[in-house]
Amino acid sequence: MKEVCNDKFMITVKVGPKGQITIPKEARKMFNINEGDILAVLGDKNKGIALIKADEIYKKVGM
Image 1: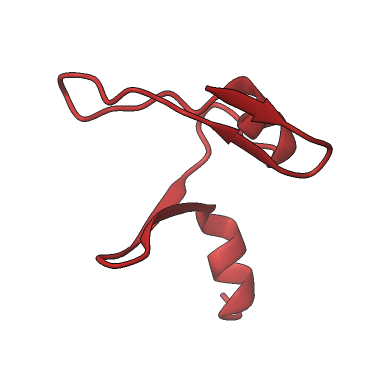
Image 2: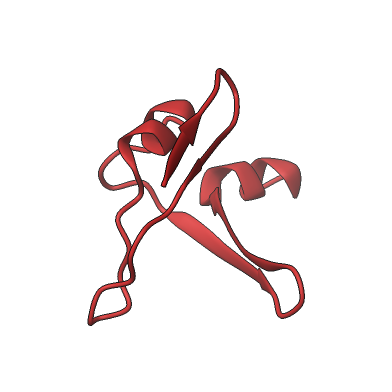
């Protein structure tokens, strides 16, 4: 499934046998995610999982 607007999107991805997913090209472009970037995985059992670039977290906490 693929729905893309100017600043929002919904794309389904499949989890591979090693638990890996591919971040879709549209998401990488929108969020400027490049090879070698480090992402933080945030999770809430009731709300789900979110990815954020680690450097964005460091900026917010003043590191």
